Image (cartoon, rainbow, N blue to C red; front, side, top):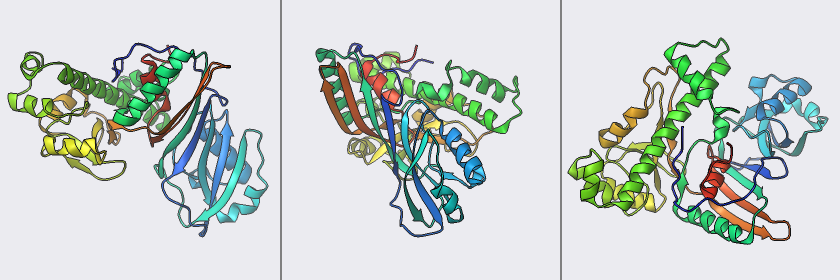
Length: 359
């Protein structure tokens, strides 16, 4: 499972080890909280805990069922993270007296709705890189600003696949029914890893094809790609790096409904303007598949035996609000940036480094 990098610069040397002092994540809510309603909205800071660890602690100390705590997404364990959770107002007294050495309630407000999975715009990150020499610092800044300008592939990060990055193997075995896991939650987690692996491999293939289209003429491409002459012309004539294929499933960006690409040349203009983006398949039940040429590529990375629900995921995203600050005396480079929900800061770092951070 190798991800193909988008940019072609040589590897950049720096040291990064994820910890609460080098990796800070702050959740950006999908909407403003009204200040009124029957749900307490807690802005919570945690460190050294997964989101599930934190929710279990709240459940035990407040006396609330896990399923009754609302949250928008999962945050890293080896980080200092800020996120929002919701509980019913009847637990206000217990919340006001809540204390834990690794968890702090920063703010409390109210809203009429419980927070649900996916109710966030994205996340703001602070990352500190160490052992950065001045020439590397300049390279890091140049690459980061390039990614802000032109976007990047939205791969799943190594965190998705477990400590040994092999959870997808067990997930595939579950789909093949050559392995069995009784616990529903763990079974879903492993199959999700398999779905994510298929997505990453599909995206790597599309990046590879886009690289070929950027490097070779239409005639040369016809000798290495088994595409029709008409499809090659449509793809080759698009000015942006990541090509839209006939039959691709697109989405409005950064939020919106899915729709099929009808005229790739027209959609390419909207793609360049960041109005839309291409989506890739997370195989599963009741999931919209691509058609035409896009489906011919996608089919290789589909598995219709998967009984879990599938989804479509942005293939191409745009980092925003990038700021780079270099501390030469400590040889530190500090990065601040925003990514849309579901995207991985470590994927951005690996694209900058042009190498895997975790061997």
